View (cartoon, rainbow, N blue to C red):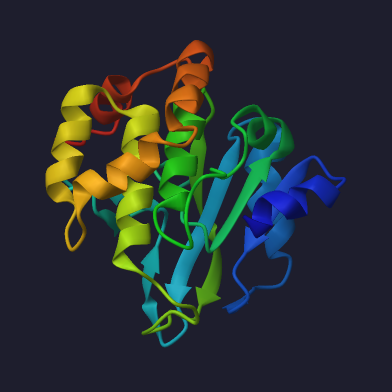
Length: 219
């Protein structure tokens, strides 16, 4: 992933990732990084508004009972959120490196920011929304790259196999649509996912039960 490559050449102690089609306020960066600098948070999102509908502002994500990401809309103060949106986020170098950055085994697009946020929490780091900072984002109706359902499903199942207990993995199998799950899992398990999972289990501070309970996700 290009963002991981970028961090290999960065020299600062905070990494900031932004999509190419975003617009910023004056002095936004210092204010966004302030919770990281103060030790309040390890990774943060600003409020992210639709450039064509500026009244619609999201402050990070949350999962619903089908593990679909939904925007947090009613955030009025700096607070923890379960999932960060990748369109504009800042993260402390130490946290990014400790969790191994964005997953190296994901394909094309889908779930990468959710998996990264989940991993941060499981490793004992914190994700916050900073509503006093807002950026504008151009949300495209269609992606500027070829997108296959197989890749989206693959990423979802990889996230499940990396972090969830078996009962949740089975639930995830039933949530995946438009692909042959058995074939995708065969390809997935032929790679490094089980070895990576074992490494995470030896290092992380919390498990998926803790995460679901903490953020009241009925899954």
